[in-house]
Length: 182
Image 1 (cartoon, rainbow, N blue to C red):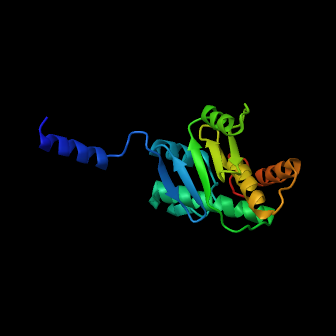
Image 2 (cartoon, helix red, strand yellow):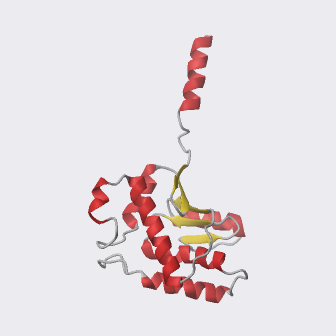
C-alpha cells in the first residue's frame, strides 16, 4: 500500500463516525443520549403529549431533534409544576436504550441486583435510563419526578415517600389514548 492510499484511509477513518457511536441531543434542561436516529424516532413516537400540546400545528415543520427537545423540556417543566418543586438545574442525562433487557443490564452493572425495570434513575450518575420499546409519557414523567425529588431535598426522603411522589406525578399525566396533557 502506498503512502497516498494510507493517508486517504486514515482521513476517512477520522472523518466518518464509528458505526455504534452514540449521539447526543442537548435541550434547555437535559442531555439526551442515544445510539442512532432510529432510536430517537421510536422514542419520539412513543412519548405523546396529546393534541393540545404546545407543539400543535407547528409539529410538521419541526426537526426531529427540535420536537424531542420540546417534549422533554415540557414534560420536565410539568413534573416540577405538579410537585411544586423547582430545584436548581442539574446536569441530567437521559439515556435511551432499545429495550428493558439493556436497562436491566445497566442496573445490574451499577447496583449488582437483578430487577425487572423498564426505566430507572441513577442518582450517582444523575442519569435516567429508559427502555424505548416500553416508554410512554407516564414512564418518562415518573422517572423525571425521581430526578426533581432527588435534587430538591437536601436530605433524601425515605424510599417509600420518593416512590409515592413519583407515582403521584405519573398519575397526573393522562393515558396516551386520551386527548390532552393534563
